[in-house]
Length: 90
Image 1 (cartoon, one colour):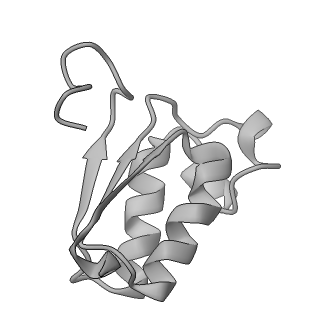
Image 2 (cartoon, one colour):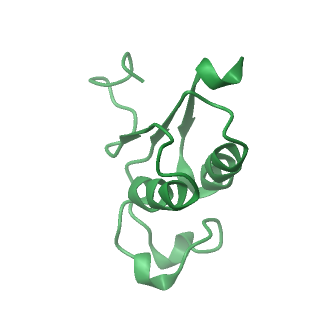
């Protein structure tokens, strides 16, 4: 039943672990991830990644990790976070 559902995650500092777990379980039809922030050294205690990703959007980092698990999973990025213009789509 979950394979036909859309799951949304807002905020990827802690949400990254949730997104990766969902990808490993392959239990969604589409995963929508939203975060406006870029990775900074101060985020490294909450997001599992390497220092080579500092300065990249958190949404890109998580999407890449999911693609390494299964490149066929449908992942939609909201790189600007959730704003008035995209809240209804999310």
